[in-house]
Image 1 (cartoon, rainbow, N blue to C red):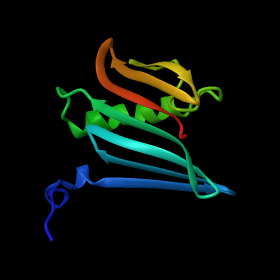
Image 2: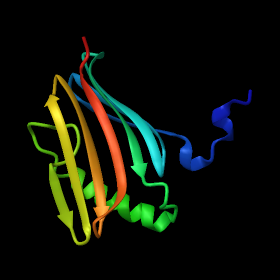
Image 3: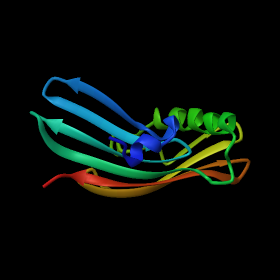
Length: 136
């Protein structure tokens, strides 16, 4: 059977990350590369309890794979500095060389939304929106 997903280039196929720690189980699923969408779900005793959805990526003017890779390496660096009281994305501010990561969020772990931007030499190169909270 041929589906729409069958025609997608390999860089746009779905990726899934999973992690288990005792009674907790994490599953993250995303699709895309330059622009991507995804969802993370945390389960407790095999019941979904918390989720976050996101969409965004590198600005359309950037198509060079090396440049995209450099931006995502910097993003991973920023996300390693996630604050314990707001564990959904990165810190409010992170800088390395010409790159600057900013994250503006509102709400609490129960119900939140936010917007992150990466700039290189004061030019926006990446943008992402996210939202989530506890499932009821």
